[in-house]
Image 1 (cartoon, one colour):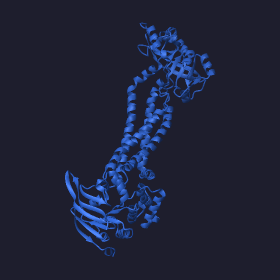
Image 2 (tube, chains in turn yellow, green; image 1 turned 180 degrees about the horizontal axis):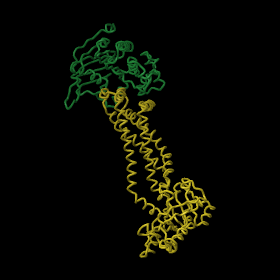
Image 3 (spheres, chains in turn blue, orange; image 1 turned 90 degrees about the vertical axis):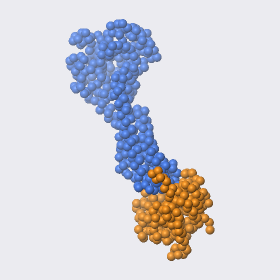
Image 4 (cartoon, chains in turn blue, cyan; image 1 turned 180 degrees about the vertical axis):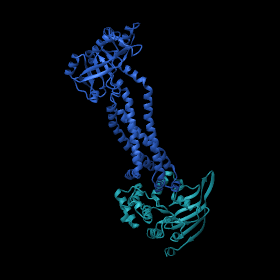
Length: 386
Length: 235
C-alpha cells in the first residue's frame, strides 16, 4: 500500500508543468462552477429569505397597477389578518443609472414591525419617524456610497418626476445573512403629500399591501378571503405568500437561470474532458510500466488503483483549492455587484456540489485509461512505445 | 536431474487482420533446474513468444506447459499473476525499471507482493543490490544510472524474490560491449553460484555462448540443439 501511494505521488509530479496546468484548469473550473451556482442561489435569495407569515396583496391585473389606500382598512378587518402595511416602488436614480438599489416608500410604523429582520438602532428609528424627509438605508449601500447618517441623498424620480432629496436618518443591518441589506426606505406619507400636489390622480394609492398573519398555516385561507373581499371591485387583488410573490419575479428570468445552470454543468463537462485527455495521455505513456508491473505479478486492481489514484490526487487537490476559492471570489462579486445581487452567499450545498463534481471528474477521467491499462496484455504493453 | 520446465506439443498463434498466424508449432522442450538456456533464431521465429509462455505472461493455444511441476495453462489471470510473482524473475531488453523509484525501491518492489515484513524486504533488497555490486547506487534513480547499471538493477530485481526461473529477453540488446559483458558475467555467476535456472532470448552469439544449452527456432519450430559443457561455456 505504501508503494502504491509512493508511486501515485511521484507519478503525479512526474510532469510538473502538465500537472500544474491541469490543476489550474480544474481550480478555475470549480471556482467558476461555484460562482455560477451561487449566482443561481442569489436569484432565489429573496424567496429563500421570505417569511411564511407574510402575504403580499397586489393588483390582479399587474404589479404596475396600484391599489387604493383604503383597501388597507378593509384587509385589516379580515379574519386571520394580524397587521397590514403598504409599500410603493419609488425607482429613483442616485446620480447615475448604474447606481441602482431598490427603493420603497413605506409606512414606517407598520412596515418595520412586519420586518423584524431589518434591525435599526432605536434612536435612528426615532429620528426617521420624526422626519418625513428622512430615509433608512441598508448597510451595504451605505458602505458602497460612503454615506453617513445626516447626509442628503438626492434621487431623480423616474416614476415620480423631479429630484427628491432625503436625509439619511438610519442604517439597518440584517438580522441574518439572508437579509437584503441594499434597500432604501422613505416615508410613503411624504411621497403621497407631494403627489397630491403634482399628480392628484396618483395620490392615495399603494403598490402592494403587506399582510402579517396571525397564524402562518392559515395563509391560503386568508389569501382567499382577501381576494374574495375585492372581487368585482374597481381593482381586484391577487394575494399570495411572500415566497410566491418573490418566485414570480424569478420566473420572469427563468430562461437566464436555466442557461446559467447549463453553463455551470458545461464547465464541469469541459474540465472532465480535459482531465480525461490528461489521464489518457499519461496512461498511454506508461503502458510499458504497467506491463512490467503486471509481469512482475502485480494484480490488475493495482494498475487501476495507480491510474485512478493519480487522477483523484490531482482533481481532489485542485477541487479543494477551487472550492476554497469560491468564498473570496463570491465575496468579491458580492461587493462589486451587491445592489444587483443583495445576497451573494456561498451555500454549503454549492461547496458540496463542487467537491462531488471534482470527485466525479477524477473518477470519470480515470475510468477509460484504467480499464484500458488493466485489460491490455502484458506482451502488447511491452510492444508499446513510451 | 529434475525438470523445471516441461513443454509438450505446444502451439501458439496470433490473429493478425483476421488471419491466424502460427507462431509456435508443436514445441517440445525440457529444461532442468540450473540450466542456462539461450533461445536463438531470426526475428519472428517465435523465441520471445516461447519465453513469454514459459514466464506465464501469455497462454498457449494447445499443448502442455509445466513449470516446477505445475501446469500453468490451467491458471486464471489473477492466479498467473500470483504465480509469476513467486516463481519468475524478469530481465528485459530495456530494463523496464520504474523511473520514479530509486534503484533500491525498484529492487524492493516485487517483494511488496510477498508476506515479508518491511525490515525483511529491505534486507533482501540490500543483499540483491550487493550481488550486482550496486549498493553504492541504491538511492539513485534509473535516469541517474548507465544502461549497464540499470540492467544490473533489473537483474537484482529479478532475483530478489528467489524465483524458480529467470527469463531474460535480449538482456544485452541495448548495451555497449563492455556493459553487455558485465551483465553476461553476472548472469553466469548467478547460474554458477546460485544455480539459478536462466532462459535467455538473444541475437547475440557472444551472449549465447555464455549459456550451456542453445536452442534454435526457425519459423516457430525448434531446430537444432547445441550443448556446451559448463566448463567450455565458462571458458
